[in-house]
Image (tube, rainbow, N blue to C red):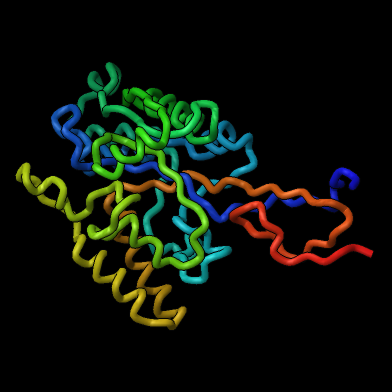
Length: 282
């Protein structure tokens, strides 16, 4: 068959997310990441536009939602303005760090916040994002190392909350109930922020968050089939998560698909390279 032409290809917003998480329970630098002002400063130090340009060659989109509301009816929409968002603001970073107790001299010298951990190839999108974020942080007086290794090595450490800052990926979610894997303490795998601090309770650490309400909202969300009611439930849930300053959505990757001119394609799957609906061309 002929190579796909301009009319036989699609580049769409993917149903995926790359996000940065902060382990508020980390012991690094006297528990610096347990300071809410420091976590907020880190979020405002990240230039998402720069991350998208480098990590996705400009084809991705800046993210504020965990699941793109384009594809998930019950996903809280950033356009509603019902949850906190964090954009690049160097002046705010400095102000927050000073509120956290650091001096201008501390910021000028560089404040150690640990290591940014991710998985896969260093030349893949998460590895590139990691380097951009490291540079963003350094420009704002925050010093972080980077570590990138095979998923089999890295993800168990994330699931055990054995990290400082992580860059993680998720995709293929079409029901917001999948947020359970990130916020419910009974989840196994992908639960990389221990909101309930259950894994740290033996060390005498407790959670500063209303994790009980998070888990209650997860249960409420699956207890009804009403889309509007579920939307409200999940909006409250995501608002609580955003207020903890532990998960920062970074970007949605683009999904590119090309096909033969021998078929007509009606529907593009924004998650995987599947042709959902097609027919033979005349």
